[in-house]
Every structure is written in structure tokens, then in C-alpha cells.
Image 1: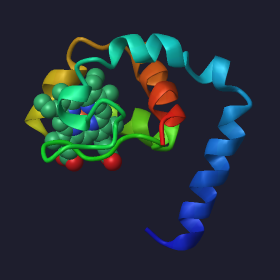
Image 2: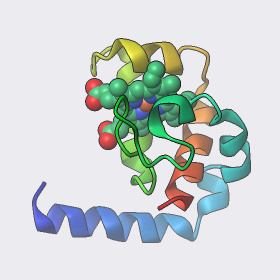
Image 3: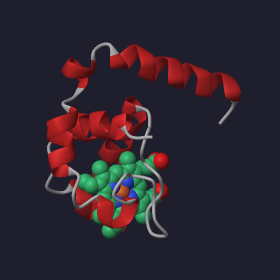
Image 4: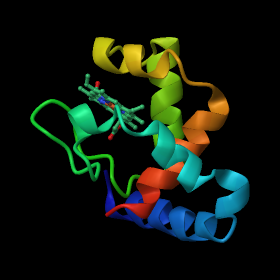
Length: 101
Ligand code: HEC
């Protein structure tokens, strides 16, 4: 990823923080995140199975979950994970993991 795009993404996250309530409920996200720890680690820092998802840009996080659900991003492990989730969960999980570093 090039540097300018990265800067734009970070600026987006900071912009998002101001509207965190509307964007997603981090506490609700945390309640849904227990199974995620199995592969992404208890603080979302990643394990040998799953990549680091802590601090991920919310928009990118939500898009990733949508893409796993639709099969656009083909990953059997994540497909199972997003199965029981609804779209509100995506935003809440994104808000929660964005609070982790
Ligand atoms: C069984 C293991 C496993 C569990 C449990 C799991 N994941 Fe994942 N996750 C993965 C793997 C493996 C990838 C990498 C897939 C790829 O890149 O194709 C991934 C990728 C992701 C990504 C994309 C990261 C990026 O940088 O693009 C997000 C977001 C994510 N997971 C969120 C979650 C959430 C939220 C949960 C809990 C609801 C969860 N995962 C539970 C294995 C898991």
C-alpha cells in the first residue's frame, strides 16, 4: 500500500472517531469478539492462524467481513465466522478492534 493511501486511511479513522457512536458500538462489538480471539489473539494482535486485526481501519474491517460473507474474499475460516453475524455486528466489531492497538 502506498504512503499517501495509508495517510488517507489514517485520516479516515481519525475522522471516524468523532462519529464512533453512529459508526458502531465498541462495547457491543467486544461482546461478539470472544471467538475472534481464537485466531486473532485476545487483543487482536494476530496468531499463527489469523492476522493482526487490532487498529484496523473501520471501513476496511467492515469491507473485509462483507467480502468474506459474499465469497469475494474466499477464506473458509472467516466465511464460517461471519455466517452468524448481521451487518450491525460488522460495525460494532470494527469499532471494538479499532480501539485496540
Ligand atoms: C478459525 C480462525 C479465525 C477466527 C475464529 C476468526 N478469524 Fe478472522 N481471519 C482468519 C484468517 C485465517 C484470516 C485471513 C484470511 C485472508 O486474508 O484471506 C482472517 C482475516 C480477518 C480479517 C481481515 C483482516 C485484513 O487485514 O484484511 C478480519 C477483519 C477478520 N478476520 C475479523 C474477524 C472477526 C471480527 C472474527 C470474530 C467474529 C474473526 N475474524 C474470527 C481466521 C479467523
